[in-house]
Structure formats: structure tokens, C-alpha cells
Image 1 (cartoon, rainbow, N blue to C red):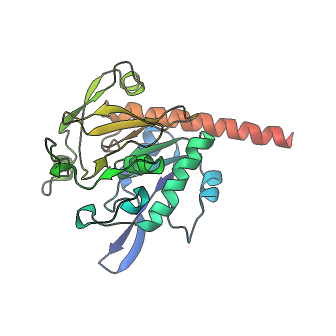
Image 2 (cartoon, rainbow, N blue to C red; image 1 turned 120 degrees about the horizontal axis):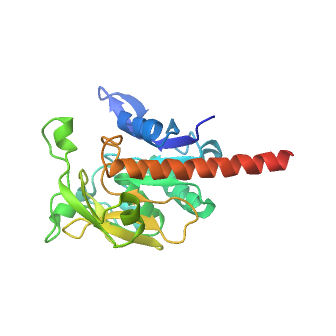
Image 3 (cartoon, rainbow, N blue to C red; image 1 turned 120 degrees about the vertical axis):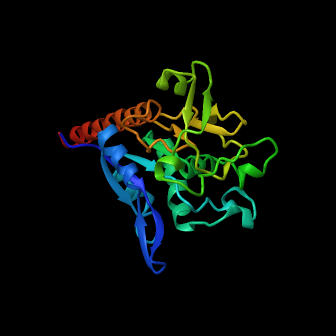
Length: 259
């Protein structure tokens, strides 16, 4: 049977400081293929190359990946400062309307790190430019040195709402996660439910209230060790199940229109 197609939102990079590419981390593709049991497809998020309408028709679900550039603060009514870091306006132009369209259609998506922040902004929310500068907050950024294993090591707990959807999905109200981000949610967007927090109060798990499809998004990076981690695996399995259900329903509707 054909696997559902999951569009993985890529990021722009320069190879050797001169050759531009769109890229997706191998661990994202591996998590989609082996844990979600879907077909991973790299998406070049640039409105000069693709349209949201084309992506919605070509893919059954989406992974909004992490990335070094941040959502431009103009998208939530603020001016850019040095603390906001680098930006990718092409990605903003695709992902923000894509999130809103998926919410409306019931098309599954999962936001990861920057993707988590994109979901909040797409729904009208705002972001802090630098979490570690806030009183009482910890440094959530990736360690600057060390191996990949050390950078993605589990570093703090996330506590979910009692009997909430993440609690039910994980089978535990408190879990350990990695943390590799500088920004975070300031004001939650319309219909954004914050269902999990770090010990310092930083939002870590959200979903869109009353959305007909899968909208679970997390601030950490569940693609790391997704096949073995007890937090990552159920998240990608649930996303895969939702994407297969959406794909099956869409194929069924297409068949009924032909018959």
C-alpha cells in the first residue's frame, strides 16, 4: 500500500558560504519514514517556487521543522531587533498560511521548535526574542560545544495538563525532553491551548482548540532518537496514524467522485 506523503518543511542554507540549498535534517526524514510510516518529501518553502494550494494537494500531512532563522516579528506586529536573530521571510510566507489552511481543512501537521513557534504566530500569537533574558527563565539554547548526542541530551522536564491530550498520548504527565531553542511563546494565539510547560513556565506543548485534525506541536526536538525515545515515539506514531486517516479519507472521497 502506498504510504501517505508527509511534506517536511526545509530550511535555506549556504554550502561553503556560497552555494544556496534547501535542506532537511536526516533525523526528520527518518522519524517520518520509520516511526510515522509515511513517505518523507522535502518541501522548498519559497513562494516563488511553490504555492500553499499545491502543497495541500500534493501532501497528506506536514512536519514544520526547527531551523536557525526565526519567524520575523513583523508577523506578530513587532519590530525586528538584534535579539530576534536571522530570518527567513520566504519560509514565513509559506508556513504561516499553510498552518491556517491545515487547521481549517483538518489536514495533519506537527510543529517542532521553530515550527511550534510558527503555529502560534499563524494563529495570531507572539514570541519572546530570547527566553534566557527573561527573569526566572533557564537557558533553553543548544549547548555550543559537544557531540550531537550531548547537544540533544535530555535536559529538563515538561509537565502536561492532567488528563490532557499530551498526558494521554505519552501515558505520563511529566516527561524529560531536550531543549535547543532561544525564542518561545509570549502571547498564545487564538485557539492555541498550551498543554505543557518547562519548570520555568516556558510553554513546551500546544494544540489548536477544536481543530478537526492533528495539530500537536512541541518546543523540543522529538525527531532525535525518535524510534527509541518514550516521548518521541508516541508523538510520531500518533502523527502517522492521523496522516494515514486523512489520506484514506481523501482517497475515498476521490473514488466516490469517480464512481
